[in-house]
Length: 219
Image 1 (tube, rainbow, N blue to C red):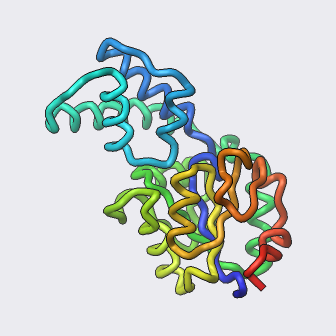
Image 2 (cartoon, rainbow, N blue to C red; image 1 turned 135 degrees about the vertical axis):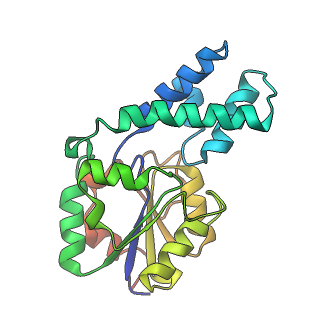
Image 3 (cartoon, helix red, strand yellow; image 1 turned 180 degrees about the horizontal axis):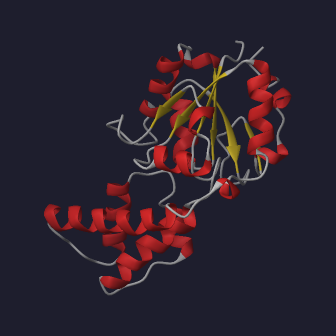
């Protein structure tokens, strides 16, 4: 099936705000009397803010009311946004600009598929808001990854069938979402971690559009 659309996760693919999330979550955990490590933070990649908070509270042995959890989630997001507001185009990951030039030259449609509710703000800060034909973020979905909703909605907005789409993801939950949605998946990161992906590269700097278009089953 010919490739007609490319769908990109934001964090870890276009930019890396994982350190900002970690700093904000750790600040919250510390305020509650415990700590989280960078290793623990890895399991929060690609999942929603609510689920991340539940995992952190479970890690700290805390059982809180829904009202208190909502307060904590809001506070964490405020701390995170303080860090995000300082972002610039310099925060775009290596290889992204060149890869998007190839995509534009090929006339392919692009969508952002992120569970983040701050995706538009980040794209504005790094100057890439106009590089996507559609933006599906946390404000448009009900179910987070690994549910395929975010990518299926992206395909609909781009007018493409799932079989004609390729997803770029750095998280296991994101790769699973792409596969469950009937799409091909390119993993950004470690082959050992992203074993479900059709192709894995360290970053977009290590990939050409020609390699994506030559993936098995996409001819």
